[in-house]
Length: 132
Image 1 (tube, rainbow, N blue to C red):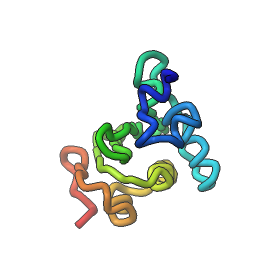
Image 2 (image 1 turned 120 degrees about the vertical axis):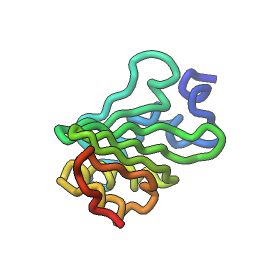
Image 3 (image 1 turned 135 degrees about the horizontal axis):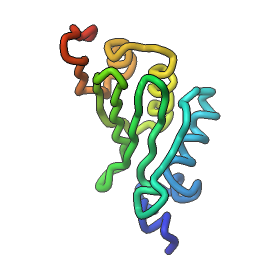
Image 4 (image 1 turned 90 degrees about the horizontal axis):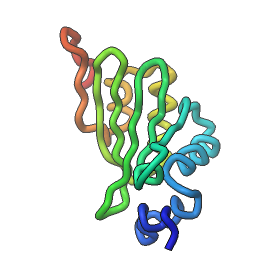
């Protein structure tokens, strides 16, 4: 078994194993969806190089991880202004679409309306949430 198949688990993520990990799969999904996700990076060492990815922009960072017992993608948005949002989705295309919308200037309220899997949203201290 290869390092990537051991780290990812062939049963849950055969497509990611074939592509060499989460970062590569995100890049392919971004191309397929014609989404601008910014710079994609992954840790250089250890299991995380296959199972974690960061999408960076001037607005902040979107960290993406994998579920270990079931197939899903954990999304954590950390805005440069202190805002935060997170949630889980089973659809990798949704991950790149949310990154594209975030880079395009969508507020957290707009993201939550478009991507209801974002179930934890917090605005910077002193700001009022724009979501319901």
